[in-house]
Amino acid sequence: MATVLEGPSQLSVGDNGLPPESVIFGRSLAMQEVRRKIGRLASANVPVLVQGESGTGKEIIAQLIHRLSPWADGPLVKINCPAIPGSLLESELFGYEKGAFTGAYGTKPGRVEMAHRGTLFLDEIGELAPGLQAKLLQLLQDGQFCRIGAQEDKKVEVRVVCATNRDLDREVQEGRFRQDLFFRINVLSVRLPPLRERIEDVEGIVDYFLEFYRHKYNGGVSGLSPHMIRILENHSWPGNIRELENVIKRYVIFGSEDAITTDLLQAPGKPTESRLAEDGTVPLKQATRQAVQELESRIILKVLQETRWNRKKAAQKLGISYRALLYKIRRAGFPSRKSAATL
Image (cartoon, rainbow, N blue to C red):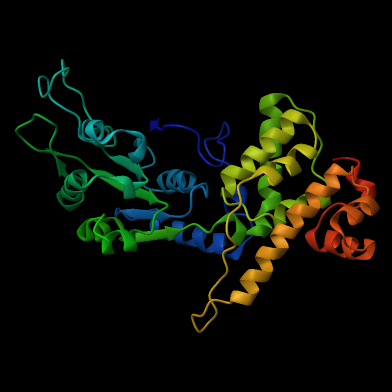
């Protein structure tokens, strides 16, 4: 199978091309539903839209859809829409004829042609310029496109998978994305949940990254302590799996759990996202309480590190009782004094 990809994916790929499915899907109910949906849609030759926040592993899912499809022996060709300037993206997608513009000294096929009888993966489709949206619509409607400078259309057989971290419904309403194109690419859709909605999968993903980067960097670090796993499970992960991967990578390199807590303390904050109640209202008290607890935990962790995990000194610096600090440490899932020596 020929594969043309750009840049690293969110779950680092091993020698077999993809991480094990047990790592990709984990144990969470949300990801098991994703697994079932992919099993049903992979064989259908219709466009698929993969939606999810940045870092949730959309490229991995696109690769898996291709591998499970009848076109797995064909090429998988990716193009990252925002990574290529708009003036060059059209030629990258559709190619050009000799003499089509200054510098076109020969004929060059585009990514669409390269994906013939395979899969074309358009990453961050929401960034596509309006003019190219119209040309992509033609490709999806009749399988035809035209190279820049050519007089005749070419026909290809290609399965299109798109990914986006944007709300395309809103983009359509605000006039930034064509409604007819949205309907074309959204024949089948897959939503990837953010990591904070699949916390039960954190430990399995951590184990995978530990093994992967131990091998890559010849690291001899041990597995994480149960207390550190709880800290990771309590983190909101605004960067999702990509952020978790970077945290574990630095742990393997530095060989200390202290590198993890430092990373989490320095991570940019993100407002707490609370689910809507069944009646559609926003549980403000619950959201406020959760945000305060997250900020409180970050402050306590910082003070504990500054006092080298002397809890009595930390309680004095925080202006709270020793018993109150112990309660807050347990609630946040921080390590006990005995295990803190490993940090």
